[in-house]
Length: 116
Image (cartoon, rainbow, N blue to C red):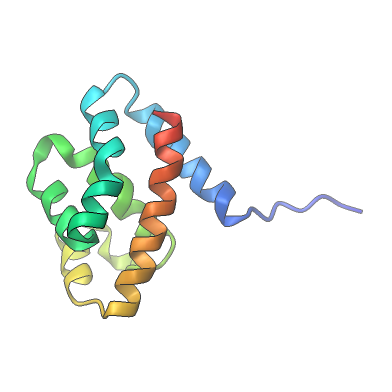
């Protein structure tokens, strides 16, 4: 039987998290913010957390981590790869879409925390 190259969503999350962790290796601020992200999201919601990350230039790697993953998973329109377009897409989401994005963001963050 031939081996297939189908990856599970967990493998994709792990690969994205690993790439991001390696890209930000030595960035203590990235590691610190990633460790706090689950609490921020639980307390304030994903949209408010993304708005906070968007507004702080030194938190850009954490924003890019989440936004690129949500776009790659097609939870946000792939045309919204630009930061401003991404935020506009997030603002217009309905509750069900936002819950799916929140669950996916939390799952990804768990992987990133393991690698940082």
